[in-house]
Structure formats: C-alpha cells, structure tokens
Image (cartoon, rainbow, N blue to C red):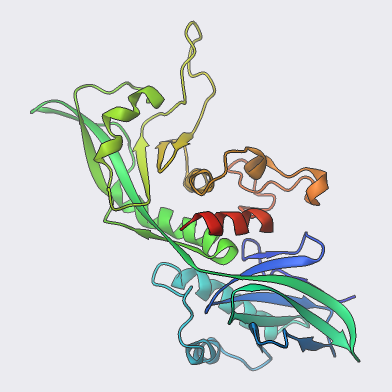
Length: 319
C-alpha cells in the first residue's frame, strides 16, 4: 500500500503519526516522499491552498531551483537555511533518478490545514495531513562568558570560541527550519561578555544576575556559554546535584562546555515554550510514538525529530 514518508530524518514529515503529517511554510515549501505510489494520481486541495510539484527522472538541482524561483522565492529559503534545503533537494533528485519512490515538493499557498491524497480511479490509497503555517524568525545571541578580577587578570570561563557559533546556528536551523518553520538568525556576531569580579567554577541560577543583562537586548534568545552549569548544588553532596548540561529561563539559556550542538537544540525547545521533559525524553504510547526520543544528545536512534503537535506549538509561540 502506498504511503507518504519523510525523505530523510528531521525533514518535517511525521510519518509515525496516523495519518502522516507535515508542516509547510506559508509562501514556502517542503518535501515528502510517496512510497509504492506508482500509477497513483496526486490530488491536492481543490481550493488551491497547497501546490504540488513532482520531481521526476531527469530532474537536476538547477531545474528544481528554477521551479522554486518561479514560486517567487520561498519565504523559508534564507541565507541561514540554504545549506539545509540544498541537502534535502539533492537527496530528492537522487531518489527521483534512481528509485521507484516519488519525491514531491509541496508549496504552501494559504494558511490552514489541508489533506494531500494519492488516488487510483478516485479511490484514496494514501494521504497526508498538512498544516500551512507562517515562517517564524528567532533572533539569537551567542555570548561567551568570562570574568575580570583586575585589569591584569581576565579569565575565560568557557573553553568555547566564537567561531563555533556558525555551526550551532546551522544545527538549530537543520532541526527547526524543516520541521517547525522556525528560522534562527544571529542578532549580532557572537562575542565575549565579561563579569566584574570572580565567578563560581560551577555556574548556577544564583549566578545568572551577574551576566544576564550583558546579552543582546535586541535578541529574542540569549545563550550564554560557561565552563560548567548546574541548576543548583545540593549542600552536603560532593559534586553537582543533577549533572545538568544546561538550563533555561525565559529568554535565556546557560550551556556548559560539555553540552554539544544537540544540547543547544534541546534548550531551544525549552525556549520555544516546552517545560515538560516528555517533549524531549520520549512520547507515551497514547501519542503513537513509543520509544521515539525526540531530542537526545545521548542516542542517535532517530535524531532530533519533532512530534508534529510540538512543531505546531513551537511555531505558534515563536512570534
């Protein structure tokens, strides 16, 4: 039986839901794969709320990009996300030229919910629910924390360097742009921020007032990098209380050196409105996603996938 599936992981198609679901940017696009769909006719919304453009054998990357250009330059195609979409389009063209599956570009013309069907002689063989939503932009500032004890004594609390911010931004957009139509942009170049006086080796919530106002006021989200961060330290216990890699409060995240790119992505979810570990630690069976770890630096089982419900919630909150 035919089915709509993701072209590759983390690209905005939740095919573990029944029926499958995906998000598309209003005046933007996304891609989906129709498996076992030979001979089926694609039946888009009759009201023209979405457009359907199949990538067939003989297509090249340049031909696909020309097709997208004719669509008035999609709003979700930005300098920050070009590399992400190039990867997906390349994969789609490869599949069209060497696989029986059918890669399909779906464009979002009007906001709202719509169903794309694949039919044979008017009988539905497969379908996918599509939400056409606005593309949201989040301005993020990456701040590298140090402290100054005297004019001659300046110390970098984090071992990270500003050059790493570019890769962090790419990772954020790789996860959120295709899945939630959220584009992250740097509000200013990454830079060091300096605390006057000593700063505890382990930074906790109690230390936040020392540097939180040194971020970029023009940013929606300020990320501060420190050597080690814990929500709190329990008196009488040796070492950190809970071994956090980061913590987030409204508009601010503090990330330690151990936390990699996936940790920043995880905290972006908290910034976007999630306060429940369920969103990141897995979904219960009632949601149809048992054993699906959504964000996890500790396993590569499915990568940083978003349940469609949370993708829609994150998009709505990122205003």
